Image (cartoon, rainbow, N blue to C red; front, top):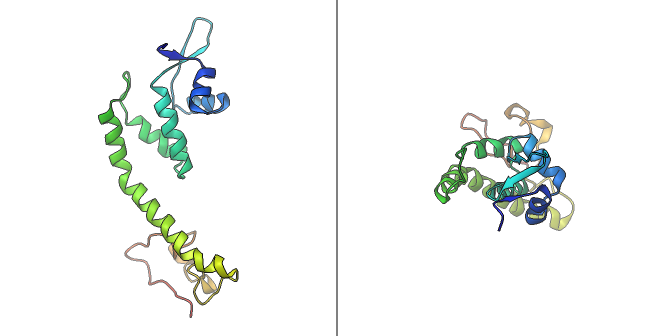
Length: 156
């Protein structure tokens, strides 16, 4: 098994298009060495980084956040299982919050989607008169609320 992969081999093995791999490299998310003919050669360890990038994107993590996480890994050597565990631990609370929010979204939208009317009597997205605008953008009734936020307006 060779120690390095061409961009085509990395693409096939990771399931990521070569154009995306070049983009990840341009952003500093993955690294490649160059041959005398200026061809990219990726260390096998880059497969793990590409997998991390892809799964992180699938759960809505931005490329900037992914870069910050990957920058915490050591340079000059393949990250150890302990390095990955440390990165994972630093993301645990963020992922737990995302899971909580997704579960809340799923549970609260069931009734609305089930009847199709988006009932204003029960809908957690309802915001009469844009009363929650002062708290910031987005679906304020679903997002975590700050301690100094005014109480939520409930329809009814």
